[in-house]
Amino acid sequence: MKNPINIGVTSRFYEAVNFLIENGKIRGKQTYCTLAGIDKRAYYRQEGNNELSLIQFFWIVPLITEYNISAKWLITGKGGMFEKGK
Image 1 (spheres, helix red, strand yellow):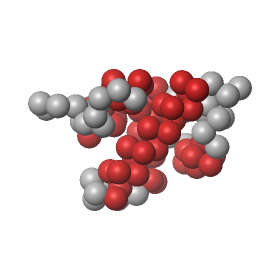
Image 2 (cartoon, helix red, strand yellow; image 1 turned 180 degrees about the horizontal axis):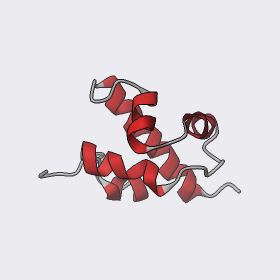
Image 3 (cartoon, rainbow, N blue to C red; image 1 turned 135 degrees about the vertical axis):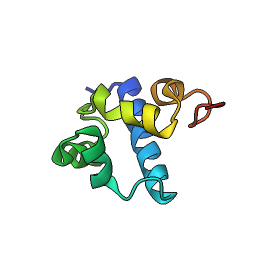
Image 4 (cartoon, helix red, strand yellow; image 1 turned 30 degrees about the vertical axis):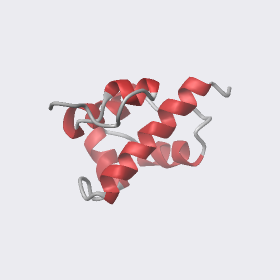
C-alpha cells in the first residue's frame, strides 16, 4: 500500500543515513545496520523500494539518540534534519 506518510519517513531515514555516511559520521550502511541491529538484507530491500514499509522503529532510534537527528523531522518532515541545542 502506498502510504505517503510511510514513504516520507522512509525517504528521510535514508536521507539521514546517507548524510551521515557522506560526512564521515559512520563508515557505511553495514556499519549502521550493525549499530541498529538491522538485518542488512531488509535494509537494502527497503532502500530499493520505499513503498514496502519494512522500516521499523528500532531502525530510527540510533539516528535520534546517537547522531542528533531530529525525531520531528524524521516523522513529519518539518524543521531541520538536526535537533537544535544538543
